[in-house]
Image 1 (cartoon, helix red, strand yellow):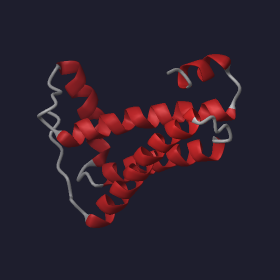
Image 2 (cartoon, one colour):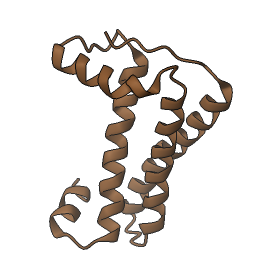
Image 3 (cartoon, one colour):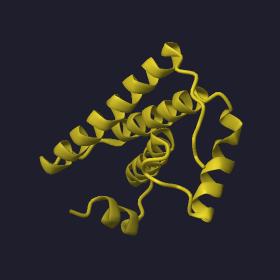
Image 4 (tube, rainbow, N blue to C red):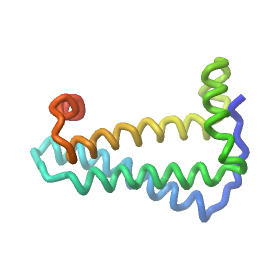
Length: 124
């Protein structure tokens, strides 16, 4: 079971919501800027990645036992107990982790010159 015990501390959830919103709106702005052919987005892409990682830190810190997070998620995935309606907190953390991975690829695309990475990130 992936049920987590949350603390619900506003000093943790407020910055999490702000940073996650910043990363989400920034990702939309990134796509729009790429569509109008703005090329110098290296700093912007790293700011997006850092903001989503900071958001993840705040949301994991809000758990009453954050050190159990990795074990709870992996166990629930491999035993087949992970479900969308069992723990919204777990689903949110997984989705934020996926977004963090995607934003890392975007930031890496602007930092190193790898043609395959550019093809994957710029597809669409």
